[in-house]
Amino acid sequence: MTQQLHVGDLVLLHNTVLQHSHSKKLDDKWRGPFRIREIPENSTFYRLEELDGAPLAATFAGNRLKRFFTRRELDSQRAEIHDTIRVTDQLKLDDDDDDDDDEQELEDGIGRENMDVAVVGDD
Image 1 (cartoon, helix red, strand yellow):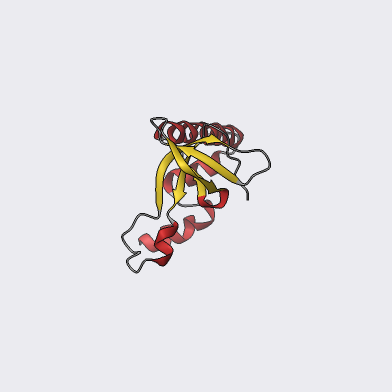
Image 2 (cartoon, one colour):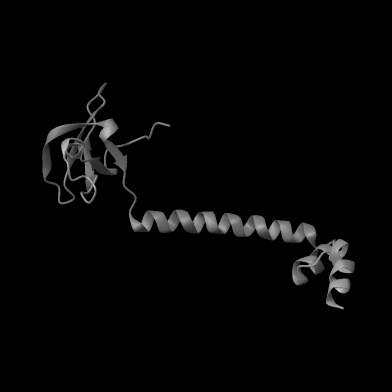
């Protein structure tokens, strides 16, 4: 799956220096976030800048970048997913209103097919 990056997106930069380091365990594998400043035409390299607008001198290969999501973006996506799940669950409940046996089974955790076993086991 290829990610689509655009000018203005926030990204993290993979720290490739760690590949040659002996103390990898506690080091940060990703640096950033940075903002994509420019994507040269017909290129797989990106020009980045700090969040304050200061440009980074080097260009960076696309395979060293991954999209960074702000907390606000993540919360918005979670809310959308949550609302979708809630609507789907409500639709399922509306469909199940006709079947009272299923509701009884959900309430007490004992299905009709297990009722005799539960009664015998209580004696």
